[in-house]
Image 1 (tube, rainbow, N blue to C red):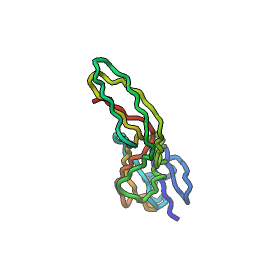
Image 2 (image 1 turned 60 degrees about the horizontal axis):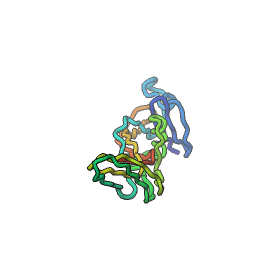
Image 3 (image 1 turned 180 degrees about the vertical axis):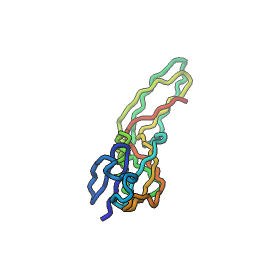
Image 4 (image 1 turned 135 degrees about the horizontal axis):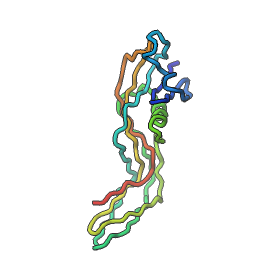
Length: 178
């Protein structure tokens, strides 16, 4: 049985025999405390930072031109349902669900493998004169980069692979004026 664990700032999430558990990060891996310390050999996720969030659109862009000389109030209503999923590039040694648990703990955002986007959600925006109001409905995705490290039983990282994860965390609208 291979044990996988994830390190995070102040907390860690481990997947052992299919069960996700949380523990203080120091209890998972203390690589510098004692060179002879016992470590569980295996793959560990190490998030190194967040990038700019992205947006996964479902359906087409809503647009409305205001040809008047006054501000206009415009309402957009979603008319397409679907699912916005996670996008991963890089190593796949650790299950995505385990890495997402670590991201939730470290960054405090409710990322998931996918988010359902439903029909009927509306938003109202104000469009200035002679401008176009636009809106996309879908889900915001958190961008987290990091590494999957293989740590041997002597707490030494012997292999490291970069990974980028874009994972949905919030369903809603993205609006802008042209």
